[in-house]
Length: 81
Image (cartoon, rainbow, N blue to C red):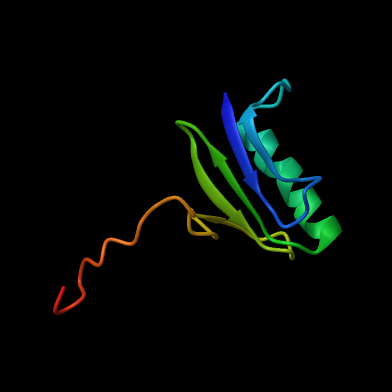
């Protein structure tokens, strides 16, 4: 399955096909442990499963923490555009 881990620490950051035997819940749990150990937020995206934001405290929330860099801003909702 395709997984993307977004983190400021390059040792944790990952994008590609997950080679481990872990399922989505286990990947999120591993990322939670890393976030707490490093004191850094981590965003986990698993294709066809969802996106989670993990705070350095270990709190796991559904949704994005970081805005994808490649998406252009649409300007929707801005007057005069």
